[in-house]
Amino acid sequence: MTVRVAIGVAARRVTETCAVALVASFVAGMPAPARAAPDPDKAAVTALKRLAEEDVDAARKVLAPFEPFDAASDEVKLAAGVLRFFEQDYRAAVSLIEESGAGNAGGYLALAKAARDVTKDDVRFESEHFVVSYPKGKDEVLVPYLVDALERQRAALHEAIGVVPAGRLTVEIVPDVRALAKVSTLTEAEVRTSGTVAVAKFGKLMMLSPKALLKGYDWLDTAAHEYTHAVVTLKTRNRAPIWLQEGLAKWFETAWRGRTDPLTPFSAALVKDAAAKGNLVTFQEMHPSLAKLPSQERAALAYAQVVLAVEYLVKQVGPAAIAKVTGLVGEGRTAEQAVADVLGVPFDRFMREWRSYLGARPLPRGGDHELKKLKFKDDPKQRGEYAEWAEISDAPSRGYARLGEIFRARGRWNSARIEYGKAYQRVGGRVAILSGQYALAAAMAGQKDEAARVLTEALEWNPDYPALNVQLARILIDRQDFAGAKEHLLAANRQDPFDPEIHAGLAKVSGALGDPGGSSREARFATILSARGEGHP
Image (cartoon, rainbow, N blue to C red):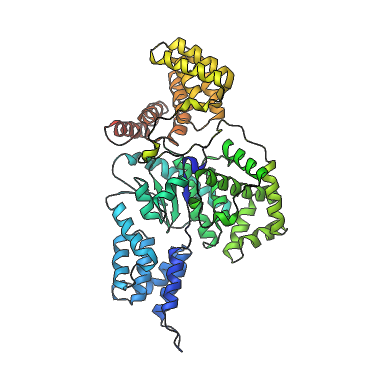
């Protein structure tokens, strides 16, 4: 899987949470009378503090005695407006905040208006534990996969951390970078610079639609990553520092599908090199958000560092260390104190040993040898043709590959197969684009066994590369290995869900495997995505 900042990372927190700033200004503005503050004022302050911790249920209970809010004091209306914002009732949020006379209310009024405008025409789908809000049209194909992944993630985190949100959590899918910036408190520049594609904040998850990117991104792992933030925020009462929040989110982002290695080959090599050169990202630099780091490379390094901090902690104490540390933070200890208590050694010693571990950890096997940066469709700087053959560092191999391209363009598939094969013999399956073109030429030349062998080898190095998975699925369908084909089509869908061929293939294999409902749904998705207009690039 590409690193989160490369194919999709998320900003999590900003310099100050709006709720904390609002509580501070509200309390500072209150008179200091000799007698105790009226109960409505106390309730408003308490509710805002609970919302600062993103504990929506607690804030709702505090304010319940004052409903209906139309007749409440201005202080209660303000707190109730912020509560309605956290409940995604944006019209009511705007109305109550405006009626309270609190101006922009620490930024909440502008956020509520932006969220209202961005989501006003959305379709809503409700499952047992989630609500998905998405733009009308092709984003419908995301919903069943998203809900399934989040339900699995919820179960995994309940087992590992011990708590999950009790009610339905809302996921808002937004169409483009501008919309994500409006609803998240990030700027468009920060989104593009860091490669941010999702944010967990304000009691919800906000995700950029994969169709906003030229080649999609790992959107289901990203959703699981963001849901982990919501769970950690709940467990720690929003007290976890950014390094611990991001480390845990990265550690668990593939828990929903049972994977454990948290690093791509690129990110592992990146952190090893930075450790050797003394160029690591400090915890102070990471605050308040990895989305605010100056480049995707620097953000990728930060993610690799913090997930290895969690990995090292687990190696020393065991998986139960995570629930213990987050529980202690929720009780009021600092993260440093909590880690020291769980490890039984001073935090400074943990930091020294962790830095040594960064340089000593073996590199995972894989084909990523450069950062796979996100390419946004609406960014004019990223519209040039990508020189994919530049991924091949071996000059003779590049020459063979380019000659293979010439033969392929002329429909001379066997000649193309021979030239691609020469390049492949020199570099193996590490370079996904070469492996895919070689396999395609072999299949078109009637050498499907050869194509299957190449694709299988290449997927060992690049398991999440969509085109390789789709190509192998074609061959497996031809062999009537429908279960194997489904596995590869689902892997491709995790990266590039707007490719109609994926869903047409899933329709076929679902029918063959005795799932007529799934087959019908996927056939409809393939039709939706094949329609002219927005969709697969």
